Figure 1 (cartoon, rainbow, N blue to C red):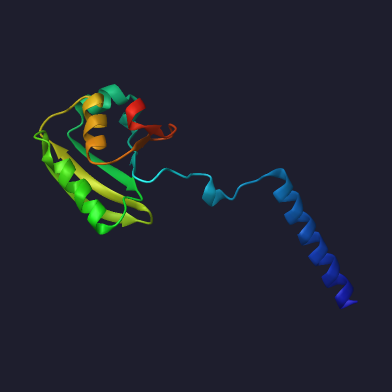
Figure 2: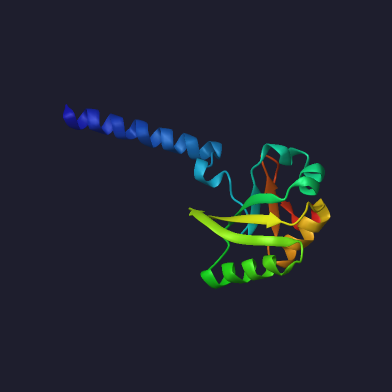
Length: 138
């Protein structure tokens, strides 16, 4: 009797797994995949990107899969080169996201930010719940 119940239970699990894969469901871990070197900004005021980038002087960004330690050093050196940057320091690493704290001498525009981030080798940007965009299209 135990074998019969065990067999029924395993068949039910198998059927459920087959049904889920036939529907094309994706695991939750694969739902949010960003390209490498994507800048992620989470700030309520960033919903209006034009105004946000024109006014912000202190900012925290997260970079998704920035690369090796050498790659990260190159990014920081490139970000610090601009005369508008007061400081650019590493913050904590959360999984695949490397946080960077940025302080600017004065607010810059959205176009400046896109060019500045691109000059450091970063490729994409994601702001809050907006979709990921290439920096060229930002």
